[in-house]
Length: 233
Image (tube, rainbow, N blue to C red; front, side):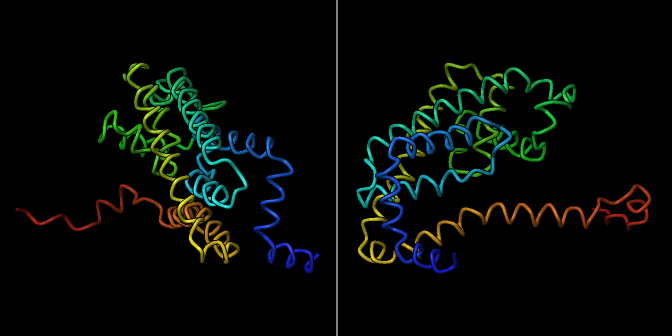
């Protein structure tokens, strides 16, 4: 098994190219589902959106996929995902923010991420729909916040389409140009490892932050009273 894995890794580009050619339609469908799920399902913010799009561009540069077809498909997935997320937010968002919904889907939503996205939306307004596309975690929650708030759908739809085009276009385009570099073509295995590391890094950081938060509980009222008073101005 180890020998097979080493052989696979040595010819990883060939394996990926062959796999895509053999399962072309299903690979396109899987990529569509992943992008749709990350943008459309508020309980799945950990999926690798940016790195996946970049990888798609790099693979398309090798001729494994049609860069225009896959880009159009993933733009549609991003637009559809945000539209579904907006609808979910409009339906249950107000109840969650008021603390009235604590079971079912509401219990699976990370309130910390939701509050972060809410602050992001308040800071940037409608532009948050576009800017949030480029911020992991936030891009999954911003459409939900927009639906729960006062943004009407027609205005949201404009930002949604523009954001999806820019997000997919920039990420896939960057992967395409990167994949056409000679060194990258000759060392594609190292590139794939780097992309995997970058993909799991945000998850690792979030896990460490969660652990540290548990180890340092907030001060009790008694502890706060024992702290020295701030100096008078």
